[in-house]
Image (cartoon, rainbow, N blue to C red; front, side, top):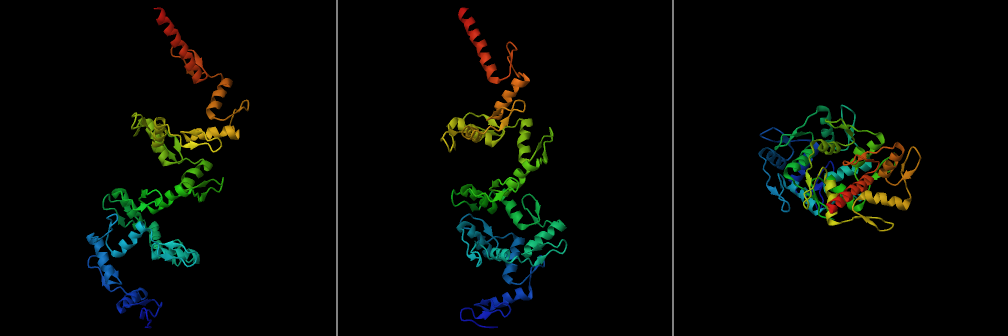
Length: 379
């Protein structure tokens, strides 16, 4: 053993120093892999007595360390200490290469390996390598299909403890990650990261085919790329219509069940989708949040702004395949095509006269109303 003025007890293997001799003894067990402390319930071994005490709480479910901010409780003081940094946003560990700051020492160790490209933990089954031991342990479960982490509430099993923790928040409705800009609370760190991009307008995920950028990788991989591949893997069980996203099937099914779960609080009109309700509410509030950057004209619907912009750009993306006439709006093209097909889908229920356009039928119906009113006057 060597001695220093500040920390007199130094490890002869890695030179890490300690104030207390007992701390050095405990540290040396990391190198020797000696684990003299056993759990009396499951025989699991540990290098330190404090680790056994903390482990026993996984059996007793005891959590004596509560958070003063959100009341979440922990089995160990170190767990509480790490958790508190989610509230304070404290990041005391800094990378000496790129100055990136992280909240936990283990995160710093993992980050440093992104610079060294070191992956010392290799899978014996598929030769895949990892920078951290727990990543290898977690990966091995993809081969063994082992799911040792079980939810106490619904008995759902998971291969990773971190995934179980995220799942538990669906029961507790806990949202420990808060946005420092708008104070919105979220249940997962990844969700907070994605949410922050709504403020920064950052779009780091780019499509290699068309260079369109997205704020979330899910938007790129699960939705956009399917527009190129024309992939629609999710099918409606009722009518076999296919969709690119599972959520679209859920929304579509409401057209069969006629379920309209989103109701307007002002007029009680119900809608299939929450987006339709939000759009409808603007008819009451007269809100027009979508403004033209060229002439400042405002619109209540984003698609209306999109159509309006074509007036400035002279873009007419909808072309008739018979006469090549172009239109700003797809609806105008459909109306025009009826002049070629002579199709008249709108019929008067009074005299059966048919029309190619809906507004022509409306005008025609007014004639019946006017005639009826005139007859009443002479009676």
